[in-house]
Image (cartoon, rainbow, N blue to C red; front, side, top):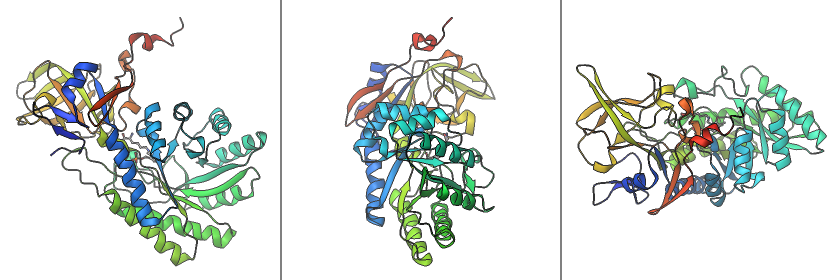
Amino acid sequence: MFVSDSLSVNSRGHLTIGGADVVSLAEKYGTPLYIMDEDKIRRTCRAYTSALKQCYGDSHTVFYASKAFSAKYIYKIIAEEGLGADVVSGGELYTAIKAGFPADRIHFHGNNKTSAEIELAIKYGIGQFVVDNDEELNLINEIAKRENIVADISFRVKPGIDAHTHDFVKTGQIDSKFGVALENGEAFEIVKKAISLPNIRLCGVHCHIGSQIFDIEPFAHAAEVMMAFVAKIKNELSYEICELNLGGGFGVRYTEADDPKSIFDAVKNFTDAVKREAEKFGVKLPHISIEPGRSIVAEAGITVYAVGAVKEIKGIRTYISVDGGMTDNPRYALYGSEYTMLLPERALAEKTECVTVAGRNCESGDLLGENISLPKAQPGDLLAVLTTGAYNYSMASNYNRVPRPPVVMVNNGEDKLVVKRETYEDIIANDIM
Ligand code: LLP
């Protein structure tokens, strides 16, 4: 009935998430409010790990790409579910460590890691750096030498695959700021160099072809290209690459039109490709890693707002303004991302209106969606945007000095506050004069 199986309707006609009444949660915590279903997140983690186990055996790791939603509590869930974590900044790394996440299960990504971040990561004893470029390789080698350690690394490789998704989140092609390219020999050269560096241990190769991808074939295609690279390294450098990381990017449902394949089908498809290619090239089966972010948290989350002004511009459009906007969800402004919305107090009411949902920021582009089907909304109604668990809280800002909303986790009907609402005092906390 809804875009996420976390959602349902109770006997009062109210929207529920993870068994909790959304209207009661909005009364208890105020709006805007992010709500996430912990059980849904855990079920999705298990769907990945069990699909990999069934299709590929034990030699696999699922790294949660924590840029999708980073707060201490998610790292606790992920740790308990036995996943690793992919971090891309000192801030994400610090959050994970402070949440008690095991450092050796952390992979550090990013196309421009600073010396301070690399030092911190080495101090914490992270599992692996996913190295982006030559500059960074030298830097990690130097710092590792100074610290008297050998740093485990893999390389972010651009496999030259076109994933059919938004240009802003496409990353597998040669014209990308991330990683080293295969087709011009850059990746091979850097591998050769890494093997010769005393304070570097090259463990794996990595690729990430993009995000919100529905077609599962590009993942299998990426696996083929990467396995050919593993074979080339073995044949020409006599060096065995033990790990293959295929990144994240699996699509989720924002609207009825979205139709992602099941996690099992996606996993089966790329693991079959890895097995086939390993046999073809006569190389050992690598440890397979993946890094889903969005697909672990997106459908587990919703955002609840209060409707304020309703502005009907005759013959043009109706604007419904809510008490949040691009500060808590910049995705429509950035990518034109579509969402499903509804009024949680009348979750099954017929959607008779076509409206533009606007935020409260001083910016015309501050919209959450256009051509949105909704029942007729009045000032004071609640409005829920679905599938906001990924890249909403993590991309939120304080533009216009708007405080960020809190995050409430629900689990089988029980709710708990895991991130509190920012206050005006928080907003001025770093202003020293
Ligand atoms: N691994 C790497 C190296 C990545 O760059 C990303 C996402 C992921 C994994 C996780 O991808 P996912 O499974 O979440 O698709 N802000 C954009 C998405 C940017 C994705 C960046 N990289 C959005 O809101 O759509």
